[in-house]
Image 1 (cartoon, rainbow, N blue to C red):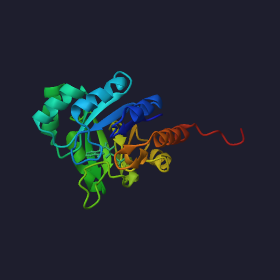
Image 2: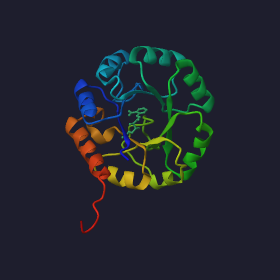
Image 3: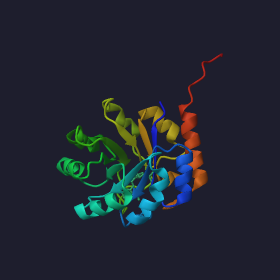
Image 4: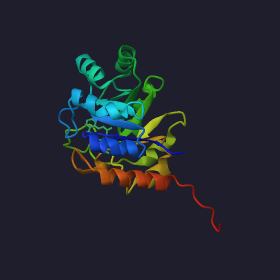
Length: 222
Ligand SMILES: O=C(O)c1ccccc1NCC(=O)[C@H](O)[C@H](O)COP(=O)(O)O
């Protein structure tokens, strides 16, 4: 089955249009000021308008305060909040109750142990996003362009709904999907020509690679 496809860290109308035209199911805006993908909430709100009703608008936040969320929710009107920090299950429940929005909880993965905390969020978060653990020295909790061992996800129960993330690009997405059968995928650096600079040709190439990976195999001899 074709996975949901999220293009994250968008900052321009041109790249949002291309992601939508190619069938992105989710578009993400980054509200982490140190990121080269950071956008002011009011700008993100304007950029997101063409996507409304076509793709889910995702606000990516890291350990947000209530004031942060008040502003982002008012100006962006997201469909989903992606919590990409150390938010506890209790904090996730509070955020869901206050804002009435589904939450996608991100986890940084390098070893099997990194998946143990997931259990406490089952039935709490609406979806998970499994990203690679940031490399040493990185200031960014996400958007580092590095992958993790995808086979770690094969233990997951079929009813754990998630997006696979971390260093996905046109060259590795077929293998990532073959190993994980992920119900959703997320790409950022892999469709950028420089940190924070999305590239329409690379967006096209990524979607082309996903389409190729999803073509049914033709029976041999037919
Ligand atoms: O992308 C960022 O700059 C970022 C900063 C702070 C928190 C999260 C961030 N990204 C979240 C995402 O969903 C990215 O798409 C994900 O980490 C994958 O990024 P990449 O490895 O570059 O494809």
